[in-house]
Image 1 (cartoon, rainbow, N blue to C red):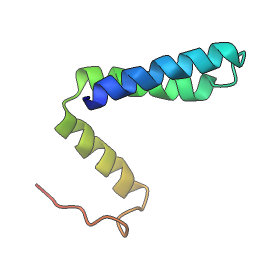
Image 2 (cartoon, rainbow, N blue to C red):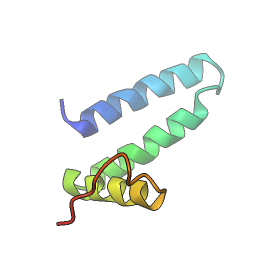
Image 3 (cartoon, rainbow, N blue to C red):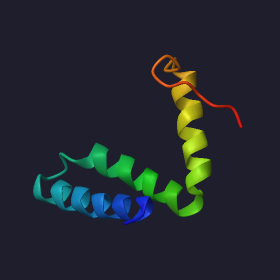
Image 4 (tube, helix red, strand yellow):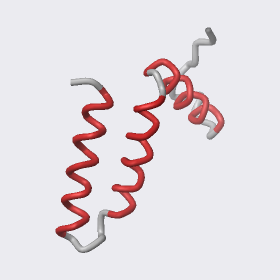
Length: 69
């Protein structure tokens, strides 16, 4: 199962939970929807670069040593 397929499945589950819990899962649903949209338009390599760039900007470089292309 590809990453985009997993995101789409998680999005459907989050939608179900949000409906059943009368809106309590809305933040998760919105986040997964954003990720699903990004997965549809971004290649996995571009997504990985974006995630690592955001991670390093947040000061997380000690946990992961980034390899520059």
